[in-house]
Length: 171
Image (cartoon, rainbow, N blue to C red; front, side, top):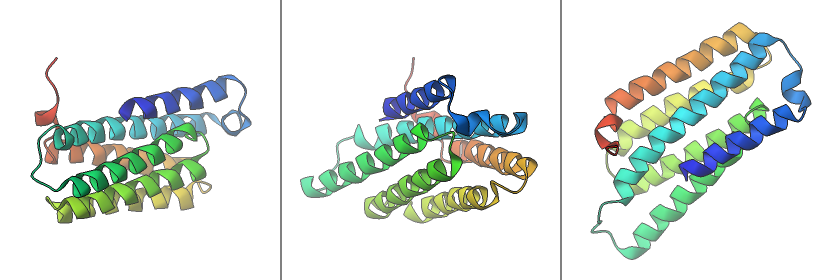
C-alpha cells in the first residue's frame, strides 16, 4: 500500500511538470510549503507501512471475520492516503482525504484493541494540525510553514515514541 502512495506522489509531481496551475500560482514559499506537505505525507506513509507490516505479518488468534474487517479498514485508509497524495498540490482536497484516511485508520485502531487510547490521542494531534492547516492555508505562508514543520516534528516524535525503528526490516 505504501507503493501506491508513492505512485500518487509521482502523479502529483507529473501534473506540476505538465503545467498544473494550482502549483504554478503563488510565491516560492507556497511551493516550499507544498513540498513540506508532500514530505510529511511521504514519511507518514512510510511509518504507517512499517507499523502495518508488523501487525499483518504475525499470525493472529483473531477470528477470520475480524481479520477481514481489519484488512478492509486498512485498505480503505490506504486508498484515502493515495488520493491525498494525488492531490498533494491542492491542499484543501489533499488535507480532507488525509483526514478521512486518518479517521479510518483510527477506527481500525479502536477495533484492533492494542494501545488504542494513546494512538487515538496521537491521531487526534495529527488531525488537529491538519485541520488548522486547512483553515489557515489562505492566511499566511509563514503560518503554513510553521504548522507543516510542527507536523514533521510531531511525526519524528511519533516515530521515536512508537518505536517504529525497532520494527523496520533489516536490509
